[in-house]
Image (tube, rainbow, N blue to C red):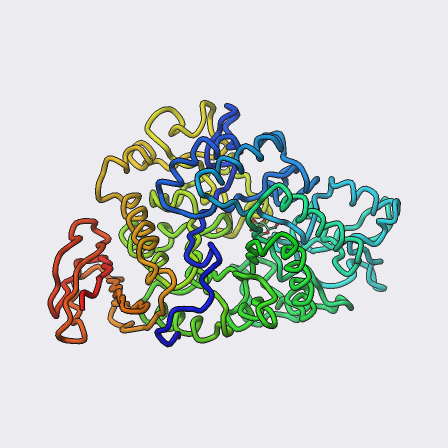
Length: 537
Ligand code: GLC
């Protein structure tokens, strides 16, 4: 927890800023093929500016055979024709900057596509690239070199008959892992960062950053005693040696050094680790990621006690000067409305946008898009196809943005690559614009309020209550105090305000109907209602 003083370093845009994640296949199609593209994003910039976000992070749009929908990159310095061209990217970047929006790219350094020319050379031991990937002979007793599993099920090693050895792939066989212990790999990948930084990008979200370094001896991972067959195969083993090694931290510091050549653009790290391990990714003397993605809101049970305890522990674990961040949904996990339901999705949005630190919103969450059933013939996610017995499919969270009630929800003139939600004629941007109490209006109101009141983004955070389905906290900066009270249950509640003598005024209710209401002593909360209260003194 902080002590009430505003943080010392306020200069970086991303501290008070809010980030909006765009899955480019699904945001806006301009080419009429049912798949979103960069020009589509450019045409929707006004929407994003109006919403009140500060930056967009765009999932990969580089040339790719799309085995993992762009997370299998075959050329790091170009744009896949599905998404447009480098020229489209430059136009998007220029227009975004003109409108005050930053652009954060997805950098995928752990693995390339099997179709990358580096892998072609490596499997033939050509061009000095023999050691650019992780090649090993099979175990003496036969079979793969060790017991590591792929995140998408099955072994993490495949035999390459061209080379007569196994190669390691933490994900699909079509995604061979690079050998980051080879200085040439490091140099080549750092040049990729420079390529995009020279074009003017504002930062990177680094894919599976914690897995770049693996145990040098490639020791077997130990069994996970808690695993059951209902869980993904990867979890059958504890990931002790296949990632999160100590030598990742100096490597990230070097990456930061490359970014420092261009000012200090934002470095976000994708890291699914327990909080205690996660915070190590800020690095010694904050030389690591500016924002190691904090996925706790995706994983914590939706109860006042658990959420309050989790937020307080995260705040307490942050190293001195480290900046917090929060993620509510992304392209890999069920959407927030699926996890907590429609009514609580509004409360969750208020929570995300009133905690201390940088929030990341996921496209479509401002419409409360929920689970979309994908019929078996339309399943595209490789993980869902490889572990069909588990509910791990990621297609339901990657469906197209719903803009209006015209054909294909205004997303495309062509049938979209994934289906829309069944309620898209009612759940779309145009319709929600016309409903003053819609989740879209609530999200926009919160983002703008946050921008106008730095107490909400930068002020200190103090837990006031977390029990009986009520979560309440105070945000404070200088003379300004804001109180947030969230009713996580379906019954009405009363919240007694403290200290007596102050007066309070509702700034925002998740029902969007009581702004300006004066509150004395007792706040009445309706079911599933969240309230931001300004303390008048
Ligand atoms: C990250 C991405 C995920 C991808 C995986 C492999 O976890 O978020 O979508 O499948 O890395 O690149």
